[in-house]
Image (cartoon, rainbow, N blue to C red; front, side, top):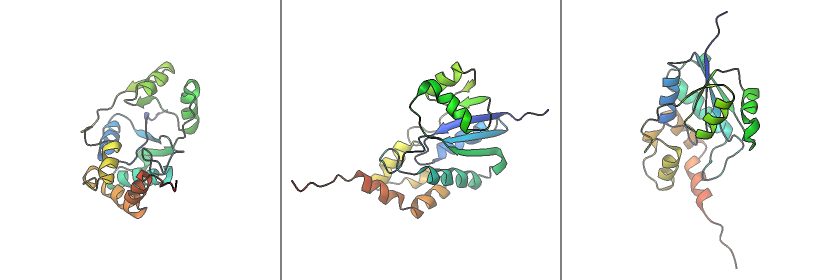
Length: 178
């Protein structure tokens, strides 16, 4: 029986950026298929998590298509936080196709899956100074060039949903009449 080698990569992808795409491309050199877990799927409309899980699924799917990655090589699955580390890997396994390799730079994720017997790989992070969701969201708030850091499809989706305006509105404080 020819078994596919499948890996998993989990990230919040707030928003999907060129670093994510580079990591996914590099991972696909090592596995037949990749599961992309959209982490903290229940969170949205927050400064740190402005985009919904559905919007992030669109971003990932369209960015991979833009980069000519065949749809039969990946799965995009929203994953809610359960805030219960002892059973988190079981939760992830329940939500995904089977996998044998875990790609993460997160120490907790690596520890939990290592304890569960998985092969752990730490992906190379590309231009981490600029290619981070934090940096991109900061640039959006400051009207700086953020578009160069994300795939064209991500720009289109953020424009379609008025994502920059959403982020700026989330940054405003309520004014009290006191």
